[in-house]
Length: 473
Image 1 (cartoon, rainbow, N blue to C red):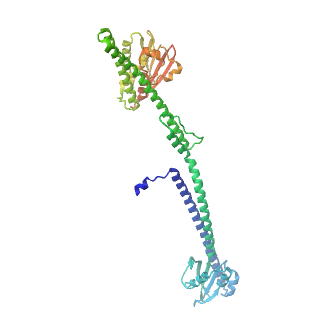
Image 2 (image 1 turned 45 degrees about the vertical axis):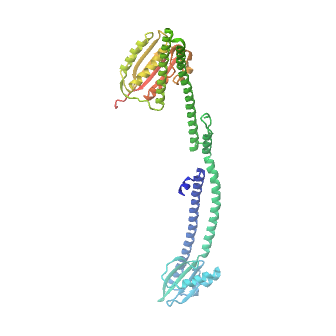
Image 3 (image 1 turned 60 degrees about the vertical axis):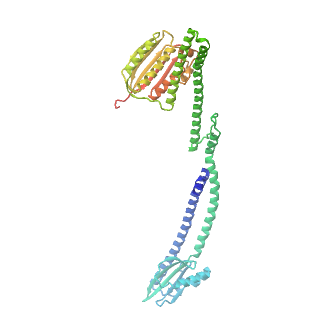
C-alpha cells in the first residue's frame, strides 16, 4: 500500500497551488478567529463595565444614607439591561427590577428559568463572572452592603444573549466571507501558479523537442529579472555551449578522419604496388618500404597528438609540476633548434634568469611547437629571435620570426584543432594542424597567457606570459 502511495506523484503546479491555498486559508481562519474573539472580548468587557458602573452607582447612593426602597430603581443608577436583586439578612427578596427588564427585552422562557436557577446560587461568594445557564449567557456580580446595622446582598446580572446573537451573526458572516474568499483564492491561485510555472513548462517542452541533430531550439526569454528569467537564460546558454561543442566535435571527427585517411591510403597504395610487382623491383621495394615507414610515423604522431588532446579534454593528462630553471631550458632549446634548422638564423637576444613552477616536459614541448611553427613558415635564410625577460611577477618569452605571417581575419582561428591558414602550403610543410592546439592546452594547464601578433608577409610574434611563484612559496 505504501509503495503505491509513494509512486503516486503530484505535479509541482498542484503542490504550489495547494500550498498557496493552505497558507491563505490559514491566514483567513486566524483573522476570522481573532475578529470574532476580539468582538466577543469587547462585548463582555462592556457588560462587565456596565455592571461595575451600576454597582458603583448603587453603593454610592446607599452610602449617602438613602434607604433601600423602590425609589432606588427610579434614579436611573442602572445601566441598560442590568438586573438588580437585593436580599436582606434572611435572604428575603426586597428589591427586584427583573420584571421590568424582562418585560422590556421580552426574553425567552429559558432566560427566566436561567434567572430562577441563578437564585439558588445567590448566597454563594461569586465574583463578577460570565457564565451560561440553560444556553442563556449572564454576567454576574455580588456585593455585600451594611446599612443601619443590617446586611444586604446586592446581586447584579446582565443577560448577554443578544450580544451572543451579534457574535453568531458575525460568525456566520465571517464563514460566508471565508468561503467566498476561498473560492477567489483557488481561482486566482491556479491562474497565478500556471503563469509562474509557464517558463518551466516551456523549458520542458523545448527539452523534449531537442534532438542530437537539432540543437537550435531556444526558450523565449521575457524582459523580466526574476529567477525563472535567469533559469531560461541559463538553459539557452547551456544549449549554446552544447551546440558549439557538438559542432566542434563533428568537425574534429571529420578532420581526424580526413587526416588519418591520407596516410592509410598511401600505405594501402604502396602495399598493393609491392604485392603486384614490387617484389622483383628492388628500387620500388625500397621506395615502398620508405613511404610506408614515413606514413606510419606520421600516423603514429597524429594519434599521439589526438590522445594528448583527448586526455586533456578529460582532465586525465598527467603533469608533474616542480621548480624549473627557465634560463637553462631556453638555452637548451635554442641549441637544439640551431642544430635542426641550419638554414635559418636562430638568435637568443635575451635570457633572464627565472624559476617557474611547471612541468618541464610540457613547457619544453610547448616552446618547441611555437619554434617549429616559426621554422616551417619562415623562408630559408629567415630570422627567428627568441628572448626571455622578467617583468614584475611575470616571465615573458618572445618568439619572433620573419615568416609569411598570418592574415588578420585568421589569427583568432590558428589555435583551433586541425585548422591551417593555407592548406596548400601546409601540405608542403607537413603537420595536421594540432600543434598550436596542444600548445594552448599546455598553456592553460600552467596559467600561461598567449599573445599573438602577425603582419602578412612580414612575420609573426608569439609572446608567452609565465606567472612567477611568489617568494612566500
